[in-house]
Image (cartoon, rainbow, N blue to C red; front, side):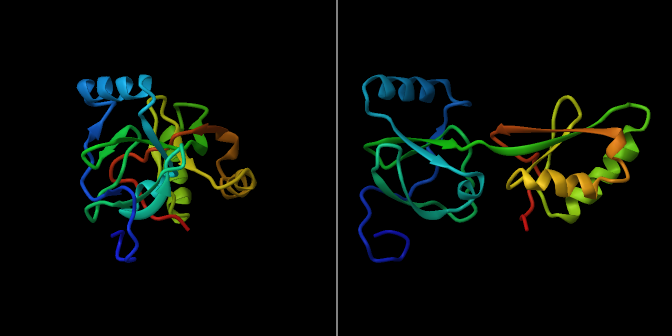
Length: 178
């Protein structure tokens, strides 16, 4: 039975994550083989859905599953779930991500301090990329105008760009959003 609803779920996944195709070469080979055979099930989830341990979803081909993972389990892009007979590849959906980057190295520390303060006050998860930009998810394009106003003191010192991508917060920087 699925997540206390008393409704049988076909199939029900009550186990932990089987593995991740980006970290386990043998699992990737199994997934590639299942895909070639037309047997691969794929589940597409938003970033917030990846954090839920109990939910009912449909795979890409329409198979309904009841997902019941151990409390505190967070799914990641490339995770594989199994009920013993089928493998389901978990795919995170891309979302709009705002990138803010200091234009000059000379004043970058004060710019990034202000960026962190403003973004933190909005309770947004952040990620710091290899190029030094601060990235955080936005709900829609209208938020660019909001953050441009919030960044008014430093707007001349940063560049803002939007990209549609899979967002993963840096460890310890994932907070609830408002």
